[in-house]
Length: 147
Image 1 (cartoon, rainbow, N blue to C red):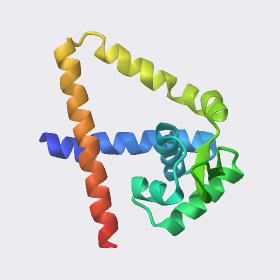
Image 2: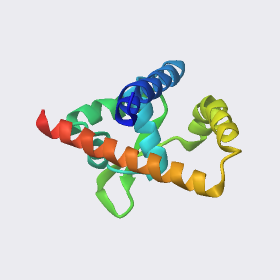
Image 3: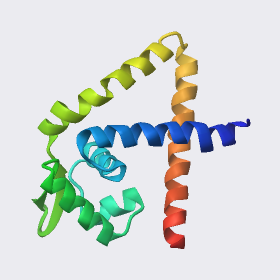
């Protein structure tokens, strides 16, 4: 199996299934879980920005944000810079209490895996993962444009 096929099939399937399991544990869909991740990393952003990050339509994101708000994970807040606009913000306390612990064992397992790596090896892995993630975002956007 070549590297592209490995990433495209085995690794990606494992990642998707992990996130499905995490989402199910939290009472969310995998898409809602990933939206929380984007919101946690990017800070409060508009629904339009969230749609672009996720490769979804604005209408789909409206429903997604509604569900996250009903579940108590996110809320819409006025944009301090332009009160006509609304931003989506996660409940950081709830994420810390409920979501972060779910990822703790994954983080610990990956740390154990990489403990024996040299700084150069860690840099290579970081470079590779960062760039594969960028490629995946580009491909997601490409597919979204084709629909």
